[in-house]
Image 1 (cartoon, rainbow, N blue to C red):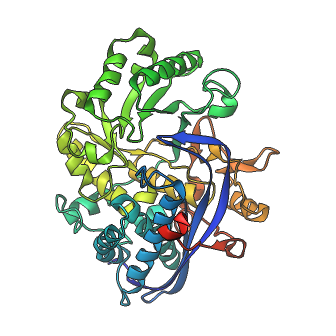
Image 2 (cartoon, helix red, strand yellow):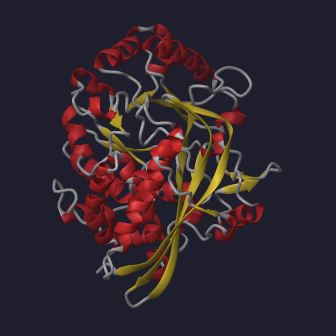
Image 3 (tube, rainbow, N blue to C red):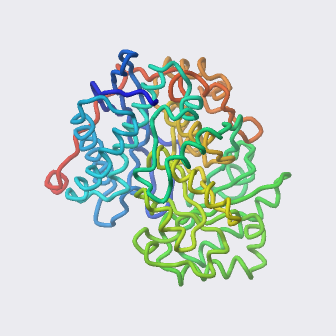
Length: 465
């Protein structure tokens, strides 16, 4: 029987994060953005009061890419999503399981956000961050780790939001998990990143010994082909076997443009170093175009959705269009990741391969990277994009005392080589041993006194003033 809880408080904070280098993906270049922190207090039936925490960047122009909105307006959309979710969650005053609470709020969250012109992907951000903090508190109250707690379904996850599954499917999937002791990093090569020479793709100081690479696409087949050929030469120069994934972040206008790039990959000798290493292509077209465009013969390439994953029925719908995979990101919802991993395992039992990938929208050192890494290790993601350490200098604006506390509690994940506390990468892998701590993959919470309250979102009139 999953323990029941009721919420006593939800508080939001933020901290500025300055990037060490520009990160360009899709149509946006990020140089800085705030990091969200969530603190919840819950009362667990028969176990007393506990506090939990989560963190995630407030990333502009990813959850909502509408061109008429400024980057700041899309960040404010995420702040509104959080505020709406807080109201809905706190309105549930009785004792519920963690998943009861999520399931009872997610429909109203999406509907309320839609009325305020917030798309479904951004709407899910608020519940996703609150759910992580609630789970952290629940695991602390139960005195168990994330891995043990989820194997025993401490959150009470069932199939009410995924009618294509049975409760027993989810229970069996959770019980059968053996968390990975290490997860390989997939090194991101952003659109503005150096390709050749010092600081380039083959520079060990930049790629951290990675054997997996995630290459961003611009949506222009000719320009992308030229750039991929350059990257392929650099990968050929490495003294290890490497694999790549491609991510267009919705930049390919339609199947016609996408077919041009795929034809180049199939027939252009200069692109053979990329084509021979390619694992899958991520979210090539805009989410609305994706839903209307069966992949047809292109499906053999192995495509996944990411930004189009904005509901519990997104993966079955994508499967019907020819997609074989879907991304796991804790900012889209940890329960949805687990449901989708259950689906992939069940569907693959029929002989056709379906999979869940690990993609990182710059999870920062500390809570964010640890919780997302634990989720991936639990559901079996063997390699995950990890770019927070690449685009941000270690713990960034985090006070040194707080960073040192995380490093002391998780010495397999962090190191200080004389340039501040940074993610510790072992032969291209991250180790998960210390994530078996009580709570959601962390022995440490942030210094709440060093954070500022979440900014109130501005109105459109304020932006126009």
